[in-house]
Length: 453
Image (cartoon, rainbow, N blue to C red; front, side, top):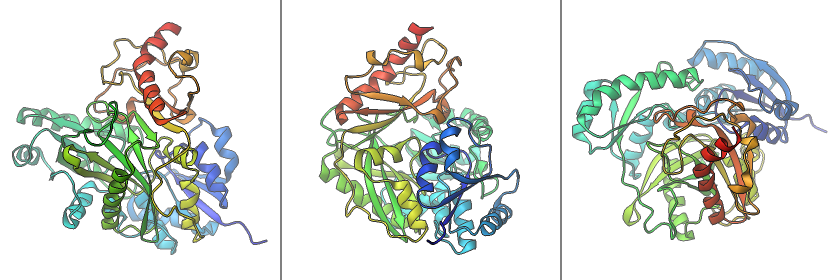
């Protein structure tokens, strides 16, 4: 029997929970974890048994110096593959793989990290996107208010999770937004949400037009978000779209609360989104990577591509894909990186079994109205049968859980994913019941917590 292949996972904050990811990686070989940040203690009893070794690397190095450290560690282990599922480490890992002659994201992966390069690449390829401008100063931001059509979204070029995004309606918003963006970025940095390879990225900003979204002509029923994502894998330069993920309406300005599968869009519309996504990802020139592409739905059938990440969606989307469609994207990517055959669906998956959601509870209702109270967070004491339909279940993800008894903080519009109180995998008999129950949890959680305090 040939020895098991060795897989190095570079850990920093971000991506799907380790208790889901690590056992699936370990099916493909010996999993060796290199932690560049403290590993979570939540669910450690579930993820640590999957690891052949765990090494902590405490360093402030960035750029090529960090590539050297990670590459030497992987080479000493005799790694057959190196990967990460964190947005903040994908560029680092791509450089490490290239250094070691292993499969990876390739030299163009920076196009999927720096949102300025991403949009410039798409603009040149004819991919439909919002109008945008690079922003290097308050003067640039003021000029963009004239050049572009407000409202505008100011965002970090290397960010993720909707953190530090600010909406500008009028020229009077420029000065306060410019002052506030630095504080919002600092909060994200303290939460471990920093790019590991490219240095000094906090100063890299862009501003773009906020497109008018619409579900008219897309969905037959109300209650859906006017944007979707398409999950996929680039395998040796060929992009495979896996499925369309639906959304509940985002909470202003752009905090996501639920990703739902399967999509209830008609198949012909899903195929159109598949084609647009393939065009967008192909333009980025990736080699081998998971992909997560966000698209805005507009009136009259218009579509704009918002961004693509060279990694899988966060929360529990990979688990949802596995549960609804029977395809494990994590194992497929690892086997692709190892050079092993992978049986991809011949076309994007549109029909599934039952329905599943990643639901992030935040201190607002489903319409974005902030909670009026700050009760202790005690979801284990909530009467879930009063919130969910018969047959629907909701299980809290330990990796994303606010400690029980912690007072619920006030909603921070620029906080994005930092507003999460808890993430739940919700499963229902069908997609419409799933959408209804996710909204019911968001609308009823404040009162439900108040009843148990």
